[in-house]
Image (tube, rainbow, N blue to C red; front, side, top):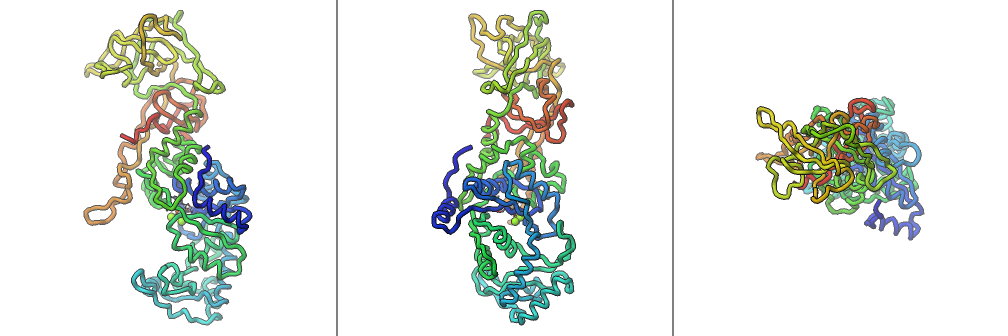
Length: 556
Ligand code: ATP
Ligand code: MG
Ligand code: MG
């Protein structure tokens, strides 16, 4: 891994530690369990857990679960799996904002008693009108002056279920004239009869995000509460709440820019649409920018972390092309993946002078730099497969692969010469008849140079595999930011790439058959591939997903 690069958040932490304002670093990653985590979250995870590690501090995992209708245990489980897969572990148990419902409620009563919160009967529509906007100052609710005792009584009856959903709210008394709309007497509790994934029907009032988040941070002893820039103008509210209740700790909220990756969408709501409308094969479809999708695609956690580190931490827009994620993944796979040969678009080659008594097979290392990966026999036989595009009847200039009358080396084996091209009735090449030069096993031919080396497999020894070739999921760089003639956003799902998945039958060296699911290989000259997490079974027909090609195919 690369050395941590200094950034403005580290600078703040260093200053706080030096001045004695803080003696430890405690961060948290606070997802809402309303969907699976995506590449943007991978960055937030790397930042929060990474900082805690670097400063010998702790990082909590907290489910921000205050919207009961959208949150589910399935998502809680998936989030935990994804954080662990990325290589991080949180301090203690997983936390839930819902664990703090009683404390949040008690602080709300405290705010009522100190005259800083009131029960409001305005309808949502009236509330919007009273609130004003950037040009129009807000007006105070007619219920703002309610006596403390009435507020306390009404709030308790809200909790007891005496009022209809949406008929009353609890609001802070801050400033209806504030230029910051978040400070115009924000709602901190609403009535909603909805079953919560953890507290069931215990509550019919639920706290709002802004109120919940700062108190949850303070309860957990968070020192630096890192979030994305859209929360910048929520910070005054974060601070106001903590300054106005009797809680000891006051974490510092620090905002950094969101990671935006091109050619994908990263919003759980939009990703959920793709899943619900079955436009992809679930949240972990290998084309999805979810952490579980990247995992199934074969991306390494090291590669995803490296990418997140390189994306950096700042307040300037953080737009990154997908190819830099693929580049980071490729870098981490290069030294870590055993190499085998596979042919994905075969032409049959018949070795006319093959003689089982004299034609030898060689053993080859799984990795040129890693003896510890071991070796396997690469068996040769009379019939082979080579890649269709390693043969050209009419070769372009500088062609170093096979051509009629030409020679090429079979990787780890002999030099062969193409003597005859066999075609079917439509003129398609179906077979090449070739001859081996028997003196070229492990040594150069005498008197001539053969530069080209191609991969191949023995037809009789190789195993058939299902191989899934993926391309980008969208044809537009910003699929959710395209406007039509009417100026409205066009549905991003229109831009799904119809060719984003191609399934082929390939032939792979037999040694892969025993591989467990999620085993990564480099198929020589083709790219990195992984056995599918769900559909591949050791001993059965292998199922591979292409993780990434060897060279950047996005730059085309
Ligand atoms: P989405 O809109 O995709 O649902 P969110 O911000 O609502 O994203 P949360 O579950 O609330 O999702 O996010 C948890 C944490 O991850 C937050 O601190 C959030 O700021 C951070 N995060 C989410 N998306 C990104 C991103 N694209 N880049 C960096 N951090 C992100
Ligand atoms: Mg959120
Ligand atoms: Mg969201």
